[in-house]
Length: 417
Image (cartoon, rainbow, N blue to C red; front, side, top):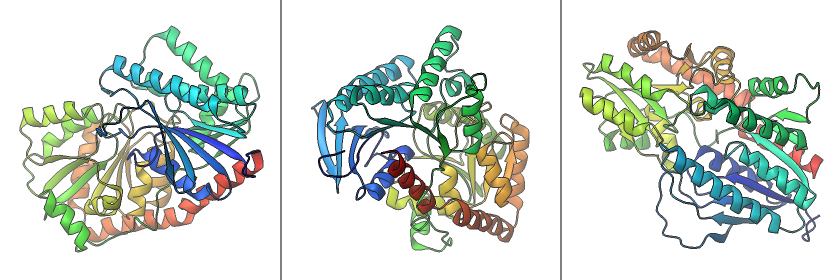
């Protein structure tokens, strides 16, 4: 028990306030929600998800957010297109995180997530044994399955070793949290031969549905966003989030060429990531005038950018079912916007769209069908699109509210600490 009389929880989420990464925002909100019930220490990288240059020189710095103690680690700048650069970044974060966790006193629970891949869980495993504490392992993405699905990792020996190590992390964890029912199924399948697995539960990610609400096109914030980027009067198909390796965006961008003559239609990609440069080069080479690449929007602007779209893309690469759930779906549903899902049938995000009837779903890599659906949505009546989006909002309010997930986390930590 902490010297302050409350259980001491050490969170190791990689990203944390003020980072714009969705994981960073989720765990910032979680820790703020829990700060009066627990003594909280957060071990995270210094903010750099969107390429911020902060000019900090110390390897480890101490900070605070309200009652939360934060220990930030300075990491090398990462080139997401380079495996070597990624490995250097991950290795530095892993070794310094382990060192920082071991130095903490009176630790009751180490709470780690599946970032960096596999090593995030190992930080918790090492912390558990070094501090004689409990370990909660939050799996946001299954690896090496995710890396294998997109061809980022192909060496069979390395794949087997990585999966063995992550299954070890799962075995030694006191509780595992997955963020979707399909991911829970993947967890159970990992251990089907052993007929035993650590206590586990499903707790969905979330957005702040009281902050992100449906707004009309005439709202000053929505209008200002469109004016800033020259999008007035356009039918906007938007992708907002990580422009990374796990979404097939480098191929989906080819669809935009079919609509290059549609002056009233705009494709808007908001965010940063490993394939953004490749996408930009394709658009430039093909001279497609109605594709726009925008930077990450500040959190306070997110409600306006999300509401500026007529349709949102929520996508995953083929093979990601049961491995990851795209967090962007929560913000889109909160904004009351219809969704074009490029998702595998039976995946968590697909289920949300189908149950709420807030959009349409096409299987990944069916590019002609995706283009057909974009054309159909472009011709759809505004009233029908608005109704679909509001069905998604109603579903979120009933099943996926922020307070539901936060209370589940509080009860879990109270029961285990």
